[in-house]
Length: 227
Image 1 (tube, rainbow, N blue to C red):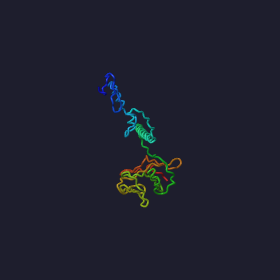
Image 2 (image 1 turned 45 degrees about the vertical axis):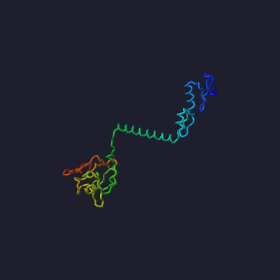
Image 3 (image 1 turned 135 degrees about the vertical axis):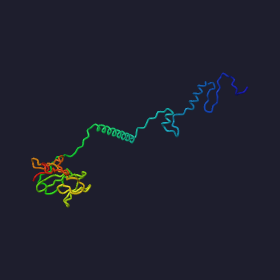
Image 4 (image 1 turned 90 degrees about the horizontal axis):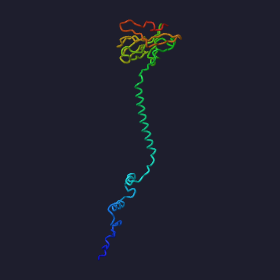
């Protein structure tokens, strides 16, 4: 009888395998479990695989590293920008419901005493109030510095003793009477009076005119101060 023949068939024989010996009588599910246990990788990080990926594949738990200060600063900047944008939008929304008004300088103001001015044209109030103070031996009056052609502000040419508009060349004499250029009439004069202290009060909201071909208003009360 062959020595390799098992004399007792009921007795389980040992099957040689390259790695592990599994009894030949083991049931198929048990063989599959043994094979799965044999082929399951250990929870070590494989070479060339990122640690989070390897941990997820093996079921291992990794502790996340604390966030860096750079990332925290970036988040703060982003949230600050968002908050600023939303605040600006809210303010613009609220501004829509507020009344819109235009603030203009006062039309009534004081310019000092008559003795503060010498004979001739004084231009010191041109920038602030757009007026010239014109003083003659008999009168003091205020010329509103606006060309009657298209509304530009003329310049006082002391060497030529005249006002000259830089826009279209209109010319006025020292009292604001037009004599050259396209200006249709003399420049307007503002209301003037003395207050209780004797100071000159000017009101540019009340103007005296001399329309072309009509009667002049320059001799009306309030158009000048008698000296």
